Length: 146
Image (cartoon, rainbow, N blue to C red; front, side, top):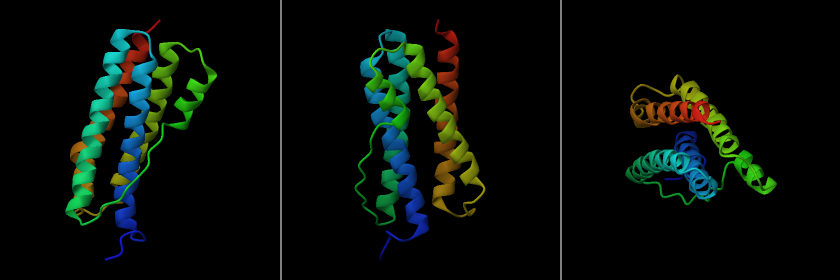
């Protein structure tokens, strides 16, 4: 069965790539921030994205798809790193903005997936709540930073 051109499997892969990209970004962010409390929070976000990626990978495997994706960091964060010196709050703000984009995407996509679709179940029960939690935790963190 050919999955590469199937929009359903493309959506699974799109979500997986989104989560893997976030995972890579958080790994780098945790290595570059100065404050230990900020680092701890970023590592929690990384763990959340890792959990989501693993669930997507399992779902794809159950559907008989084994895609190899090559994630990279979010462009906005890679650009911040390229600039050199930055404050932890700058990093958290960029990460929060990317989480907002992801949250909006998942919310928008929720209405377009069919009720019996296992991806919709994963979106409603895991991806969307976790995305919301990650976004909220970064919002709170950003507001707490000087």
